[in-house]
Image (tube, rainbow over all chains, first blue to last red; front, top):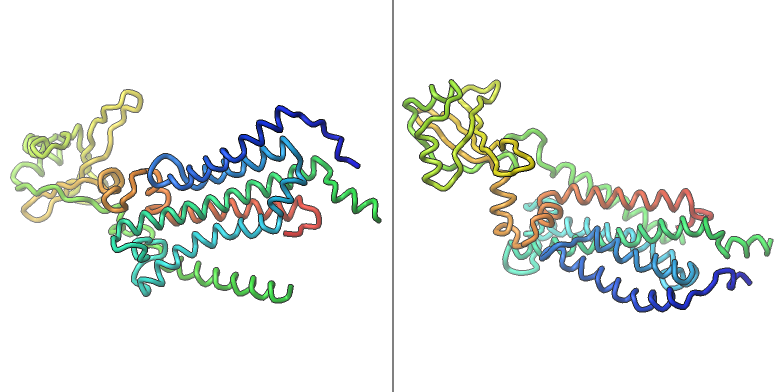
Length: 160
Length: 176
């Protein structure tokens, strides 16, 4: 009923369709190269979230919510923090209490202490990226929902 | 639904226990032996005239010569560390056009019959030893995720808290 309220724009939709995979790929590139080049978890997470925002701008909110539902969003937002804190905890567990919290060198990824620190940093950056992505998308969903007077709420009013 | 809440409660308690352990694990504030405050020893010299010159805030010729011989920049001026007897800070002039402020670089301490000259460890650890210690080429990342790991964990928690607050305030029926 409300679907044709928004005018469809072929140029915007086509460009968004082409751009979104590359934006997401670039975000993963930025996160993965946090230790080897310029980049990191915060930046990569925001770039990944911007892909979802671009989809919302070009299409509609309901489509994003179908692909990335709010329940998954909530799980992801805490998953990143648990990954970060868990990596720190692993350092204590594997060193049997000798190593400090977040001292990644004691986690036996490889046989070298320094390489372990580098890999631990990689996982931490991934955790940061996941949390930032989920939180930015979540905040955007909430703000956009209010502006758009979400269809869900109107349905609820009609059925009442 | 009941079991989910029980799991969440257990996870929250685990996290609380972890953070209590971590708070015990943080290095003590104001610890003079903490890694960022430590210094790296360069060499020792004999006392003869050096101490009296240092007390008058004059740079001893011998000190500059020894430093230049080892490839370090000579100090531009010397200050006594207030409150402590027999310790001095030496500053160097930086070759930067836009922020031409002197940098605190050497730490000179009198130890019995000799004078110990050390560099402050911040520059040494962060810029020169970082790659060696962490095998990561990006200086910003090993600062952010390794040396200052606690700080970044806190920052991520702040972002998470902001997101949860927005969910609770703005979302319909506040469901997660």
